[in-house]
Image (tube, rainbow, N blue to C red):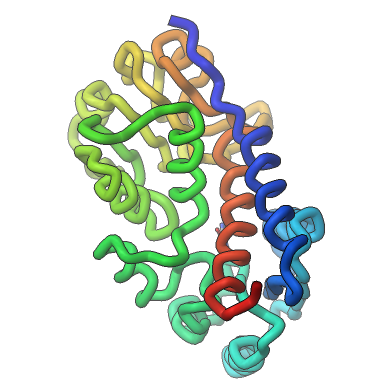
Length: 281
Ligand code: GUN
């Protein structure tokens, strides 16, 4: 079976266009503050992309590029200031933070109604009980993509490889909410191949190039590759051996151009939703 490629780039453009249409009608525009501490080159690329997205979507954005030596107190003071500003609806502190900073304490300081990443324990709890107003961007982007391609998780077996707080765990919650049967695999899973072969929907989010070979994909499965790795040849790739998996899957996401653009688009949607929640119309 030749798999249908799920075009995250095209769908992200559509989602962003929908956001732009909404913001164009708003008297007070949504605002996003992006905080970057230190000079991690990958983080810089991500932050630039997020700000560009804001521009395209009619979302006001501000960037705080702080030196690597920034103290915990300085960072918390900035978050506190942003928490209190009416023109800022979303606060995104780019991770990872330099090692001397306490990531958990920083994420806890962001007001939950401005937590567009959905990393605050309050929002994580809301997600767990199926009441999330802001949903984590990557898992939400994947759900949106499945919907767009007419893939209903109800009754299907979804196997997630990876148990991170950013992707694996929240993905499991969103899949459960859509009535999938969910298995979460990780590095200690005894027989990863046997688990993966059960998947009607396979979400690979382990961050290890080549982890999922074609023989681990059930015939006709939907394969979603979240990872962004560099192969030994320096090429961007996911966890899935794409060419092999594409021969067996019914649908598959490419890397790049699959989940990544959807994550960014959902950040725009979350910022719009936060602004709505703040009474902006
Ligand atoms: N670093 C890598 N991915 C993310 C993300 O989704 N949000 C934030 N804040 N930092 C990240």
